[in-house]
Length: 116
Image (tube, rainbow, N blue to C red; front, side):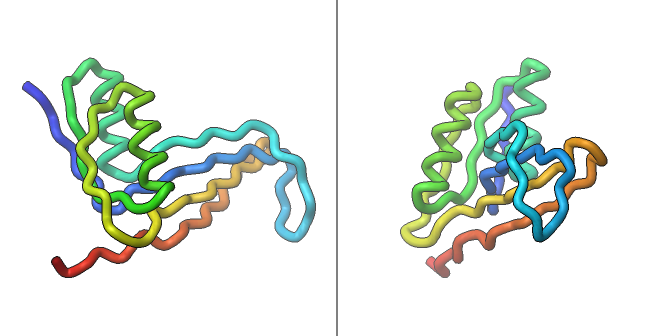
């Protein structure tokens, strides 16, 4: 049996480890990880790691949306995303203080979905 997931507002998560992060200061980045995310994509990644056959779909837009699709293929996740004619899929910047483990999340807005 094949599973399917749907992600209506997928995002490209950019997780940045910053030792001693404090707003208003200049800091060097530790490690960085960039991955497609959103509830349906996270479920797909977990299901794949458990051996499930799956396909994911959802709405993507612009270059960021294409990058999301490319990264899914790299992870071995089959996708059939719908590419919106305008806008840009969102990027979420997640800053993790490598010392305190406190997290700051900054979310872009997703693309507008046309009525038709």
